[in-house]
Length: 218
Image (cartoon, rainbow, N blue to C red):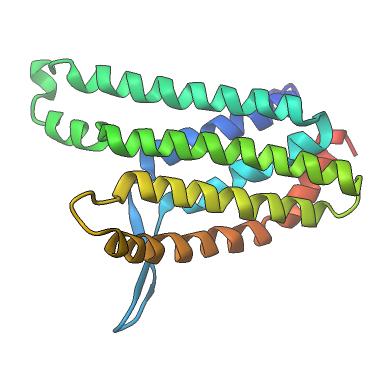
């Protein structure tokens, strides 16, 4: 308990932010079924539980400390994702010792991500996170401190759409197929997944209020 009392609130938020984006990057490749019917199956990445937290932390920091501080946290997170990607390339390229030869294939399968998927994730996260901070700060300037729930959800809805659309397009656009086929396929991925993210954002709105009060020391 004494250890927890010695943690600064802002340090904790930044650490939680970095934790969420790194775990999403490392473990987000696994999907699980959300809804299965004879005609339709909706799957989601396990990262769906963490990504809304990232954008909520953006809004909490922007509300209390301003957009400049939030952008600094975003840049820090982007650097950590880049470091993770580079270190993954290094770790998986090194030869294993005799003791770990049998597990090398599984290790590489888990941690070696394709350059296209990793870069798509990094670009989408960068655009969406900065957009989230910009929209939230602009709305706060226009509306004042009121309507936190509205500012939080509008900024999240827009930024989460950008994140989903950019990632799915960069990761799964098939250059050997016609444009119309790509649009139909990508829409089937983007729209349900974006809707799920928006739903998660609405659910987490009370936590944004609690986070703002907690960070302000109330």
